[in-house]
Image 1 (tube, rainbow, N blue to C red):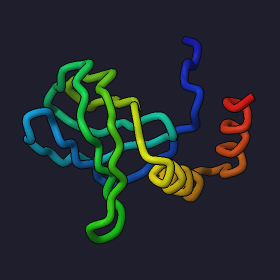
Image 2 (image 1 turned 90 degrees about the horizontal axis):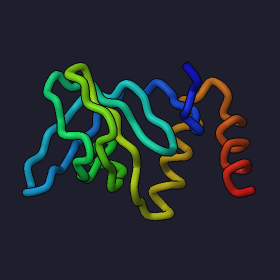
Image 3 (image 1 turned 135 degrees about the horizontal axis):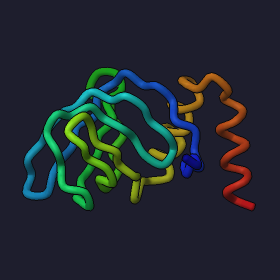
Length: 116
């Protein structure tokens, strides 16, 4: 099977809060994260196409708030693609991914290729 991902995913054992439409909130453990999305463990299926706000937990009360959409849900977890974020949030996400990547230079290389 051909790999379709264009961004490196890194293992990240944090948590993500999902603010759902209507205001409900759930918190899930993360498996991995990239500059374009995340995968979180969840036994509950979430409707594919659902848009919500992902709040990636950092230290203390700090988090990264990103508009995201569910692209995969299979009863083991959910895959989300990031739809929109503030430039400052993107820079912080980039740094988070670099700090957890086996090859941080690859992250910068991927960004350079996408800008070309």
